[in-house]
Length: 136
Image (cartoon, rainbow, N blue to C red; front, side, top):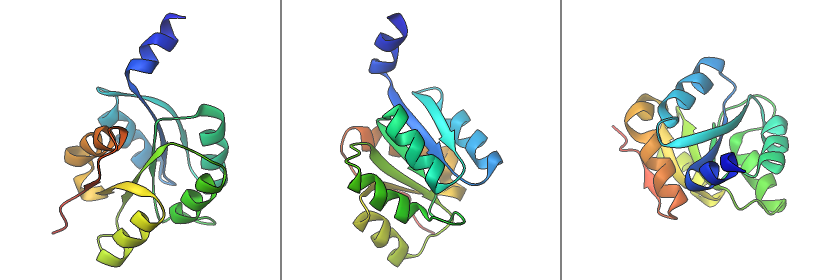
């Protein structure tokens, strides 16, 4: 019972990226302020984990083989997920940011700014406030 009390106080995050090193790095950055409840390396696994774990926030890569993060976001929306979406990506083009926002993303972090921006973006997303990394 105690662990559920602890996890309800801290933001529960699912991290999705096809790069194992990026998953580990994101988890390390998030751990001081959040509980990383799981990770996934592709779209179908992300959807399965999101349904099973019911995270508060999903940190989601856009460019993944087979199923993009934007497609994952659309599917999660269809399934009624209430998790806030923070996209974590290498893409810094304005049209990709707009596509992520249109897909339901409230946060957008470019990977070069992962260390400085990811925890802030997740906290803002949990509070219902948008966050976008400064681009160039």
